[in-house]
Amino acid sequence: MHAGLPGRGGAILVSFAEDYYSAGTREITGAFPGASVEQLGPDLAAVTLNGSSLDDLAQAIRNAPLVFARHLSAEAWRFSLAEARMDSLSARHVPWLTTISRLANPSPCNAG
Image (cartoon, rainbow, N blue to C red; front, side, top):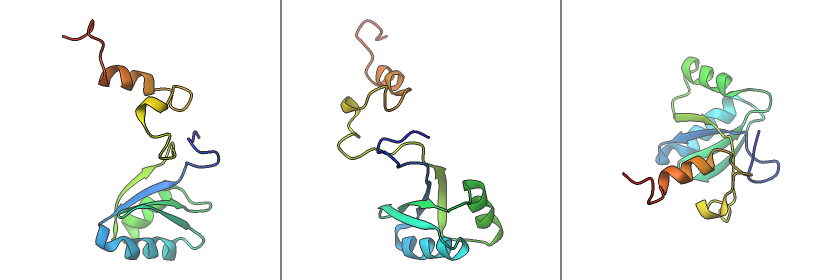
């Protein structure tokens, strides 16, 4: 696991319709006692399930059914706001970032 902030990253990112954020997080913590939820935005949470996985959450959504979750994703990296600027990130943080930067900002020699 890689993280921009020490000890951070690896949570499950869950999106909800903004109006149903609270109901959705209550639904998850009800289905997974001991789960921790960190609100990242008005419709996005980072969920840690303490021994359960993304697959377990996806299965619960299919079977329960948990109805408020819209999207699930594994968190790979988390950066502070200061680190999030493209020019401050480096290959040390995200190995594939150099390739993305080259694609986003082609040199004049490579422009078609």
